[in-house]
Length: 124
Image 1 (cartoon, rainbow, N blue to C red):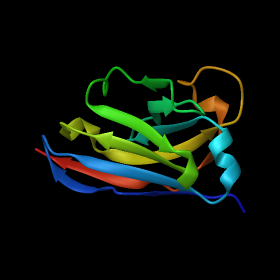
Image 2: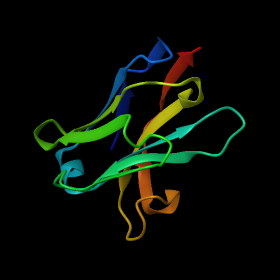
Image 3: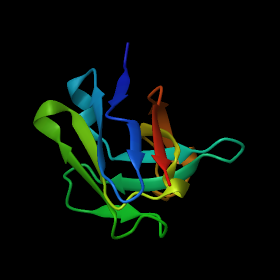
């Protein structure tokens, strides 16, 4: 069964950093673009960042641009999200996913497999 497993979340003070990882259970995931979304309590799940298959193109939400960096290691079937200068408003459950449909990277509808999520909490 295909699985995506996130790790690296935790509690950090404002201004701090965290690095999230998302490992795929099968090698063919390296053939797909991947992304990170997040969902705060009482809010819709929102796009954070995405990366194409080769890692040459990346996409970011305006709210994280310049602070977060998405990358991937296809040999390890893993995608990363380096988060710097964290703010309390970054607090959310972070999910990784696979883009399997044509369409905008920013839309939830183009992603099929999702991980279980990892909690990121930023204290002020």
